[in-house]
Image 1 (cartoon, rainbow, N blue to C red):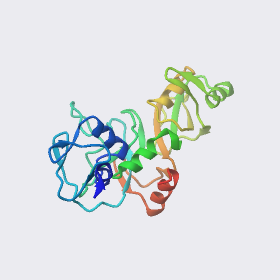
Image 2: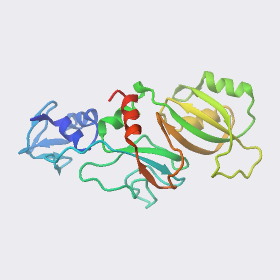
Image 3: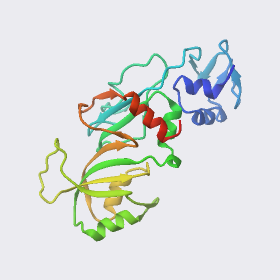
Length: 249
């Protein structure tokens, strides 16, 4: 017998905390009755989430992580009513559970996106308390002097609170990128917040326009070379170990 949130997290539905919120909201049922927090279930129990029966008697799958190279125009969603391309369409099928995107990238941002079948690992990698760094290559158009860079390092006030770059350095244009405007400048920046469009909004606060944004790192994982656009590869054992260490998992 195991606690229901542990069982459902083990088959990759979501993190334990998210499943606890589902239970509190009455979305989970066991043998036709609303589930209770901490309730223990066994192999003979019939579990439903939002009315859909869940296979809980499957062997827990080993934790997997995919490194995906998102292209501009793709959406980080499972389904799009307008029929646009999503990042989930080419991922390999799982015997049980589902792929969970670690954070999001907006439609105009490309680069590294992590997927995992482990809900608890995904939750920790996204949770602010672990301060996982995200690194970006960014092409910027505007008047940029040392004062601008100093303000961005020290922090500026955005509409949802203060934000800053942990690191910002001038960078060379990525090898597979082209610049049409000589006024464009490339930088590498690092943030710890996973807030919506925080990189773009930081530059916009200084009257600068971001014309290209590429995520090149997430925690200890770097995009590197060898992954085609809209393609992926499996994380190596060392990369998976480093991710676990970063969030004490």
